[in-house]
Each structure stands twice: as C-alpha cells, then as structure tokens.
Image 1: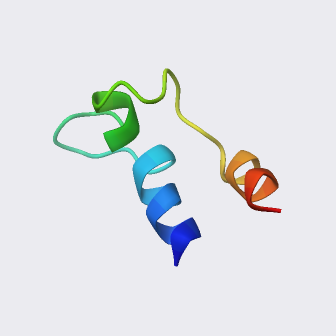
Image 2 (image 1 turned 135 degrees about the horizontal axis):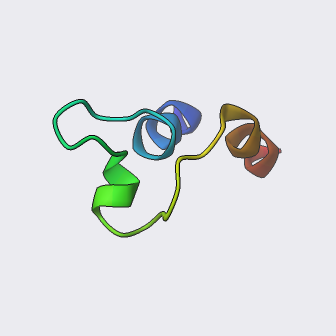
Length: 42
C-alpha cells in the first residue's frame, strides 16, 4: 500500500497541475521512475 501512495505522489503526473503532487509541494525536483521507487523500497 505504501508503494501505491509513493507512486501516486512521486511518479504519476497530475493532469490539473501538470506535475506530481510531490513536485507541487516542493518535495521533489523531478519526475521519479518506478524503478527508482522500487529500489528505495528494498
């Protein structure tokens, strides 16, 4: 479940704001790849 929320916030681009929620909040400077997220989880 945590990977789902992380993917939503760091990988998936929101159509309205044209960025990920993490980018909009200033937590990330770039779009993450799914592979990077999985590497951090394990």
